[in-house]
Amino acid sequence: MDSFTDLSSSTELKKTKRLHQYMGALVVTLLGTASHGAMAACEYSVDNSWNSGFVASVSVTNDGPTPIDNWEVQWQYSGDSRIVNHWSSDISGDNPYTARNAEWNGSLQPGQSVMFGFQGTSSGSAETPDVTGALCGGGSSSSSSSSSSSSSSSSSSSSSSSSSSSSSSSSGGSAENLYSLAAFPIGVAVSAGNESRSFLDIAEKQTSIAQHFSELTAGNIMKMSYLHPSEQTYDFADADEMVNWAGANGIGVHGHTFIWHSDYQVPSWMSNYSGDFEAMLNDHVSTIADHFAGRVESWDVVNEAIDENQSNCYRNSLFYQRLGSDYIAQAFTVADAADPGADLYYNDYDTEGGNSEKLDCLLQIVDDLQASNVPIDGVGFQMHVQIDWPSTSQMRTAFQEIVDRGLKVKITELDVPINNPYASTPFPQYTSYTAEAAALQKSRYKSIVETYLDVVPSHLRGGITVWGLWDGDSWLLDFDEREGADDWPLLFSGPSNGPYEEKAAFDGVAEALTGQ
Ligand code: XIL
Image (cartoon, rainbow, N blue to C red; front, side):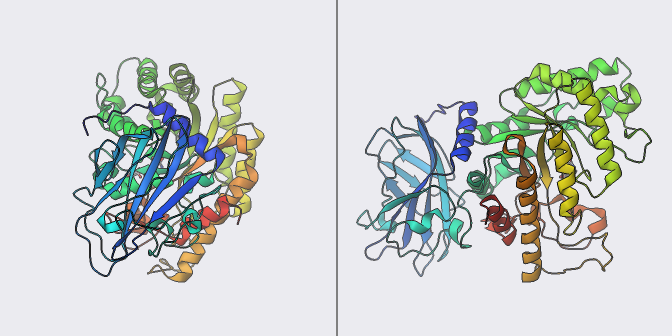
């Protein structure tokens, strides 16, 4: 709508979503169901609210025996609540509001749900109006509202609905908003820009991400070659689009990453650079940090600088070759100067305890940085783990070492494949996603999150990010060692354009976060 303007700054929204996490979700639901002949259950939920605004969503579930082709629902606020921004539906009017399906989500099979969201302003507490419309029973519904302090199964306590379950409550006991169960960021890596399966091209992805996650990491598009394709050119367009979407949805962004050795990521102009390498690299870090300052809450400043097979622990990367180990400290110092508000992490893989040489190297590097007063805030453990490696006690040890140094611990790239190519048993151990595999994976995800909560005190919890939304998005599917084997490493299953379904692994994370 023309009258819609995005009134809220991304920073404010980010804070509010965080505040929401700290308070626990106050999810208020109200079911408007048909008295007679209606085909859908229409549910309005306040997902987040603060002094001057709110984020809410409406779900429409086809309760009838026949498919719905197009849907349209209405609601009206009795106070001064007004919508300023919306997604996943076409909203018109100015109280009352009418929402019609977007082009891609008009058809609802029996039992299927659609959810759309919006952000609004209001001077009082967020309202939960009746959702009306021919499909929902035209407002003649009986309804009741309820609130709960935890969002888990929040809709279970509401109303007289005869509806079948909505998509988010269909797996029984699972969280309405995963992020609201944690007082720290719950993140997900996304494809964006020109990548295939960009979340910005798939509305259902946006819906699931906004529903469950409070932080985004770019799986690729904020790496060196994407942002800095030639010496004089920075290309921020794709990353800005992603970061702006996050801001508009009250979601934070973890930046990944200023410096990474990986061949395909180091732009060739940089590999061949013959000028002042140190000045060039400082400029790289500083320009990017400055561009995103205030919109990115934390950064992987340097990624994967360790090679535990080198006697001094440093990977013999382009950066090491040109500048020695000093490039790491420099990058933190420069990033801190450009964006003093962001948390700065050193990020690496296999440091979570199973490889003790690598953990030793990590600690040596961190100790050196701290001894030189380098502004490092935390350590990112990628945690591309196996179903059975490393052990929980090894993870415990690794996290504890970082906690002992007063630094934040962030799980930055978590995935838990079912099959382990390095195990002694024949690979793949599972050729289909059986109930046994699902249970195994659930308990593994659960124990990882429990270990994190157990060892890392709340003020040092930088968050937990999973490396992709649903199984078909996982980078592991292209991994050489796994070639030819299916796997199911993430928290949601497909289909590829959604709606995405919460797996047992999701329940494992939710249970750990709620102490079940
Ligand atoms: C991966 C991406 O997921 C892939 O799409 C890409 O082809 C290679 O990089 N550690 C990291 C991430 O820090 O940047 C990597 O991401 C996965 C391993």
